[in-house]
Image (cartoon, rainbow, N blue to C red; front, side, top):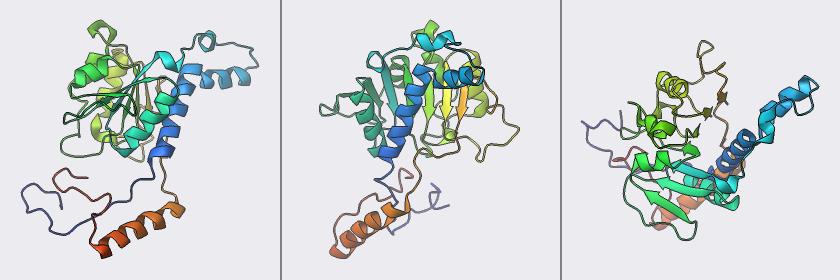
Length: 247
């Protein structure tokens, strides 16, 4: 209701808890990428069957330094993920809505061309918030750009942003048509994920219950007191909600 475009925007200021989620979410993303490349799940399955290298796939992994990571959403969290990926030698592309100079410090190539960003990716990480401009952004066969037949690499999609960037039905369709090769999801269109969802048992989907970046109680006072001090001094507040953007 606060963000109803037909109503006048609030005159008061609102800040959000932020600045602490980047490192844990970056850890989660890189752990998932490494697990996917090295076949950790297959190794665990082999162990339960007492098979020594029973899964041939674990012998055919790629070095992360040969891969490209596309990040959808290049704020604080996105930069933390970029920093972690670059530490492993990955090439990083950042998709942004507004033009941005390339980041020489982090060696990130920014682009406003979504198709270009998707086609270049071996892995895609979405950290997009839920706003009028991002909801459904990957609908309408947008992921078809990722298909090998269309010049893409059939990448793995990770979502740690918001689940409504794509519908469950379209995600399943993208997998069935090999637009993407797998999906690793920490956020869903509907949460908690219903037991009836087809995502649970799909062989190329990994589901986790929105835990990639949990709020740690010890982090809250630092963020609150820093902003409280800024407020009392009349300084610019950190993490202030932009009513026009919706976050």
